Figure: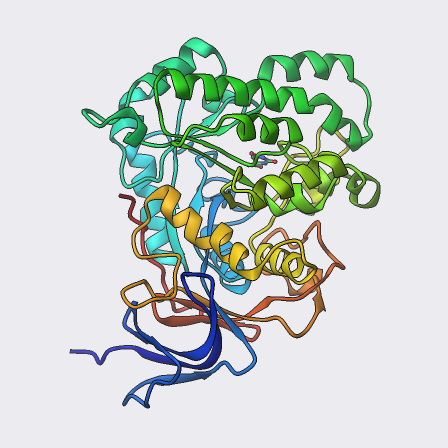
Length: 447
Ligand code: DOR
């Protein structure tokens, strides 16, 4: 029998589940945290990690990423993406179905799980994508965090944009379960009809800034209103992906059913339409960047609990693809390597607390998706942890990035809270610039 893997993290500033900060030790055995205390005596066989001056957080769970495998591996693959996760302090991710083939069947889901088990350094889960025809797959596929619906902006089969087609999905839960507990529906909410019409109005404009006018706030609001209407009608568990506008935040603030959750990306909090002037099409994503006013309203909604958590929508495209003239340039930007440092830097600037960042990037995600034993530093929880350095600032540098696309919209930003050590299932997967490519994550389970 092989000996147990034991880690003893010493003298860390530990964020406890109640948000309190203590200086102490954490002992992990195999994949679990077994003890958290001001001082733990030396244990035979333990690998010690000296965390003096560093802060220990539960590993980040990123609930919306596009990792491109299978089919689009020239942009990213599960190995490169999970290396980038390890460097960014992301210990689990939920990945979207717009790969090739689309993840719309159990077979495609099994294929992704199999690939991930072979090459993923962190824990993984995969959404099943809705088409107008695959209702049986949507109800039965497992394990999956939920059903992803592109209400706009996905070409081909993944687009489900009419109220009738959407109703068919919202109306059907997993057999017998009350709808509120039935399989979660996560929506990319942008109204395709409005976007089609505005594309014609703004045709022949090649300034990427027009992207935010074509796919405007109203396009997002209309789709979010429809998703909320259907969720209420069928009392169906709903999650609103990457909410981007003040109007949607205000709508949710007025009346948010208890079974609805929403997320926001760091880029919708920290970047706005002024980014087009600085980085051109690298700032192009769906839903688009908005105004400074939207940034502020989204921040307030997050602090007030109207928005529940953070996701990156990591959506890598090559620099060559991004260099095409708008509108031929693809939408999307990478994010898993920078999200935690961006949010912790915001915390250091007084925009929020470190405990709130932990909640938004770990605990609240685990609760919303029913991922057991993750999101807290306490005995019995999984040993998915990240040590961060809140004392030094370092810029985002292109040459240090591990994502295959090798760029970031935040290049040059001077950030603190970078991960120094990332631990997945009790094993050190990243330490001071080095990735341990032998570590493998596990498939996530969902209650
Ligand atoms: O900008 C985006 N790009 N938003 C999405 O929702 C999809 C993504 C992609 O896959 O490139």
